Length: 115
Length: 115
Image (cartoon, rainbow over all chains, first blue to last red; front, side):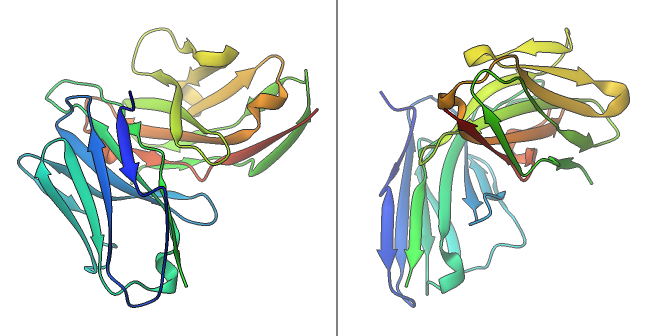
C-alpha cells in the first residue's frame, strides 16, 4: 500500500497548456509538500501546506498553485506551462507538531516534460 | 542561512570497495540530519537519520553515518558496496525540533558501481 502516491507518473505537454498533478497520502500526516528536482538533481521545496497554513516559496512563479481539498491530498496546478518547468516534481508528507522531530516521506515523482 | 554541501558530485567505485560520501552543513544551532537515496527512476527513500544521541547512526542496507559536530559533518559510509547501490544520494538538514518544511537538501552525489 503506497504511502504517498502521485499521478501521473509521466506528463508530456505543450507550452502554454495548463496541467495538474495529484498527490495523496495515507499516512495520516497533517502536512504535505511539493518539491521540484531539476535536471541536475537539485531538490528544492516549492510549497508546504497543512490545515492551517500554506507556505509558498517566494521563488516559485505564481503560475504554480497548490490546492488541498483535504489534509490527505495536495494537488499542484500549473498554468501556462513553460519549457523551464520541465522537471521531476515530488510530493511529500510529514507529521508536524511542537517538539516533534520530523522526516518527510516522498512520493514516486512526476516527470513533467514541456515541449 | 543553513546550507548543505556535498562535494563529491559523482563517485565511481568497483563492487566490494568501501564508500564514504562527504556532507557538510552550515547552521549555528542544533540540527537533524538525514541521508536519502534515490534509485534510478524512483522516489527518495530515507537511508538513515540523526536526531540526537549516539552520533554514529546505522541505516538500512548496511549504511551508516557519523555526525561530527565540531566539523559540521555527517558523512555516509558503507564498508563494501554492491552494484545495487548505484543511485543518487542526498544529504539533508533541518534545525532540531522544526518543521520538515525547513529541510534543506544538498546537491546530491551520484554513485556508480562497476560490476
